[in-house]
Image (cartoon, rainbow, N blue to C red):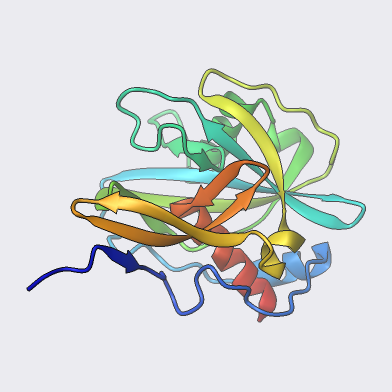
Length: 216
């Protein structure tokens, strides 16, 4: 049997599409996240754990989320990708929340304990790299920035940071597909493109869930 040379993949029924009219106000965001009961990752037994910070700020009542482009590093499965600040838990962390806070401070110089507050978390995900499910789960914690003018300080792990406008994402204006090579196949995955940045994969899945929760 001959396999198609290109596949179009949609993770979920509406992945990559606009989820419809969305209330992006901060009050609605907090209300929805406080009521959310996050699901465990498919492989809840994963021996390794990681956490990321989904940091939301409001400028003139318009929500944006902080993203970083990871430095090119040998051995890093997500080298050069756009992601949320975050990383693997360490023995010094008292919890996964501590992991997200520590990694955000180390990578982008923002102390979440001083300039933001936790408003909820999203579904736990199984880490995926190179088309392979890894024995690691990722927990996304959502924070609301109390000081929208807070500055970032880049580490050697981050090449750049930027703020992604959620209204443009929700409208579908940034939606597209990213062709990813998987063995002999070209696989089309949903993505967003913003000011030269490509947002896809796990980061895309996390933000898609956030927008879907806000549309319900």
